Amino acid sequence: MQSTSQNINPSTLLFVVPEEEWRNLHATLEQIIDLITRRNADDSSSEWIESEAARKLLGISPKTWQNYRDQRLIPFSQIGRKIYVNRTDLDAFLRKHRIAPRK
Image (cartoon, rainbow, N blue to C red; front, side, top):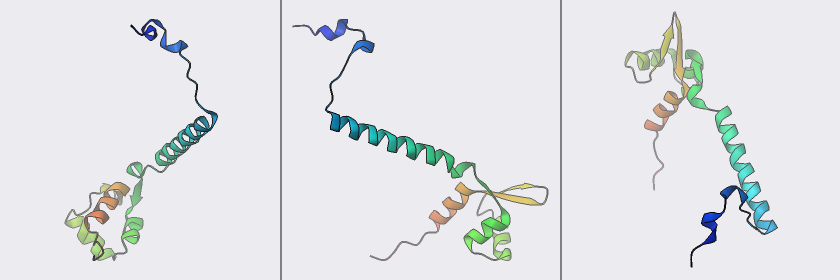
C-alpha cells in the first residue's frame, strides 16, 4: 500500500495537536526567541571596551595592564593614544586563568 501523502502538497497538510501541547510548544518557542533576541542584543563579541574600563574589570594596576599589553597577553587595538579591548578577548583571558575549586 502506497502512502497518499506523496501526492499532497506539503502546504496543505494539517496536524491536530492537543491544546496543552500546543501552548507548551508556543511558550517554548517564545522563550527561544526571547533568548536569541537578548543574546544578540548582549553580543559581547561586538563590544569594545576602553583600556581603563578593561583594567578595572580585571582588577589590575595600570603597570600590570601595561605589562599585559607589552607581553601581548590580551589582544588590543590602538587608535592614536586610545586603546580598546574586545570583551570576548577579556572573557577568554579570564577563562584561561580560571582556577577551579578543589574537589
